[in-house]
Length: 243
Figure 1 (cartoon, one colour):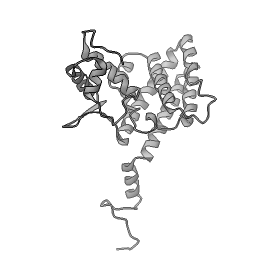
Figure 2: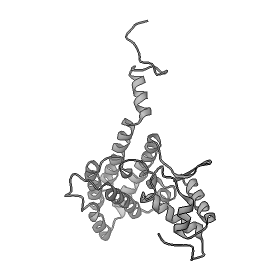
Figure 3: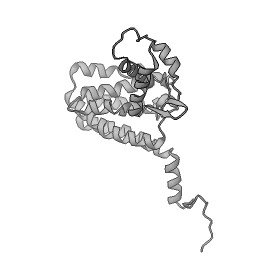
Figure 4: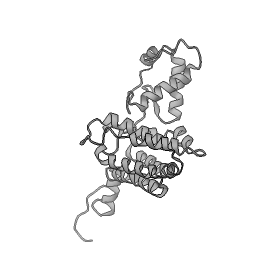
């Protein structure tokens, strides 16, 4: 790891960027405790700028401080992930539409390269590499669409970063084999400069992830059981007796 202590300039900001990159790359995974002493030593800085960086990441919801235990990489529960994906559906649906309207020939060529080395690789087993490609693709679409504050909103509020904070499957909600075709359909729509199709494909992509998260969310499952009469609000199974 690069020693930043010799630069003597804005160490807390540099530490912040490095730690954030480590979280995004899952070198620091959701739920991991952040060893302040070890990290400060690797970065060649004192704990003062390191703690400042961690507090900034805490404000961004990527890190959480637990009293008497230290700083941990935040892990999001399924209900939180559903809310994040609902935001992404709206914002990235708009981004895909605008990308289809603004994409250049050079960007079309770049888009066509995404996921190309996965197309003939089924089933996909390298989840980590696919996750990185997934993130790069979504960031690139918002970059193409960069109008007003759209890219800034997604970046500043870490909305895309939050989406990869599931503990399992390298942060992926659904398997690569399931989402690869969806990504390629989005790419086709943007490259064909079809705004309507691009937004539809992007929003469908997120709707399917939301549906999966909802179906596997314990709170949703319990609510469905209550509504179906399988259990009472107090958690007791209903009997067939009529009162």
